[in-house]
Length: 184
Image (tube, rainbow, N blue to C red; front, side, top):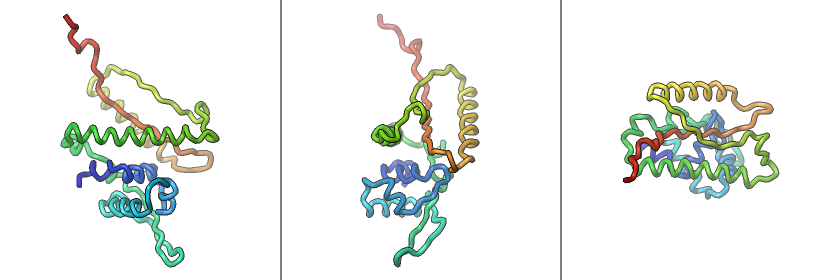
């Protein structure tokens, strides 16, 4: 199974996203987060991620005669490399993007469906698209700077007054009106 196939399964993707940011969780905690997923499916998908080295067990403890494991995401194993992305077909990328945007929509729906917690301005919720005219080198520099900035804030980790925020990035070259020949 390729890394893309492993990570883009809808339930596995949700497990990975739940553990982003160096978070840990037990199966019971994951089950509470993914309450629409059957227990058997959740255990099976966790096992698949552990076997692939994407999740690791960071602790175990006995609870009522069974072993409760706490899992952590192995971040370096939880992404598709540039070389792997190059090998993916156009349809593979369409499926990957669909899985990504479906999860993005599910996260936004969950936020909107919780009116007691929804405060758009105070929560700094937003979505927008901008267009930048950049050379390939400038685009790479921008992405590098963004990664460094995100890494700096990710190092802060959970703490008092901090709230987990999802930031999603999509970058694609746009067609310019000048690239389309005028109709005659």
